[in-house]
View 1 (tube, rainbow, N blue to C red):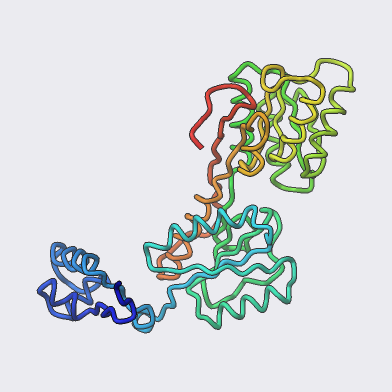
View 2: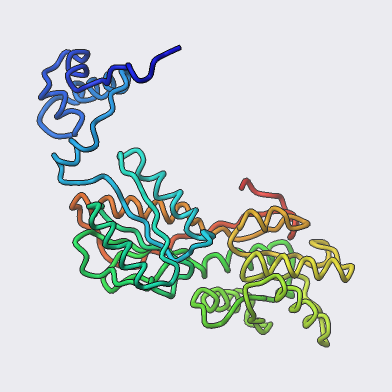
Length: 339
């Protein structure tokens, strides 16, 4: 049995000896500064990796005046949007030796302020703010902080860097796919009209379809999807041959209601959702074709941006809209895509 407690810690002295360079050269190579040949720098890094050298985070922080930590602040306590964003942030920063810690503030301004002060006390290098909708800011003032702040899937302050999914692009992908597989009577069932994302998706749907069908606005629930089918099938005129739903819960409720009426999905009615919420989309019967907002990539971009700002690199402020991706499953026919 190996005694982990007695294992010797590999130091910069060991790296220098193994690489055949001075301690000063080894330190400069590992910190990407100083003047030396590329071959020497790469050799030192390779040797350090081979012998298991791990730089002391405290010493590294003292030298660079950084803590190598990023705070992630959210009011999305359920984690539906925050967890994939955080996965992307962590993935982007792990290779840079930066840790991420999450603080959930619900919608409590006092709790939010406490968490911000705690982050500043810990001397975080930056903060990423995220939430549960793109048109609402977190209930805490993040302007004029002594560290950079980047916003992801929440409303940012003026002159900030903000990342969000391109909802119009996602809606266009959904409608164009339905049209591509031959559907012509496409109805859009979606959430509350006071959501910016709802309006943006609805506008894109109307543009893609020629505004031939009224949009059905409701709530973010399976029961609304179920009720919307009852409303559609009670009206006069042609019934839809496809549904584009504002989220996966609405879509699942609609699919259940169609099945109860003996209507086959996708043979008679194709259905597309929005969000690619795996726990809902994969368990819908049949599995749900849906739009993925690429929240993990959104988090990755936010992580790299806050790192750049922490390192003093210039970043142009503004809103960056990231493209969505259509995940094709069995609810609309066509060849399933790789998730």
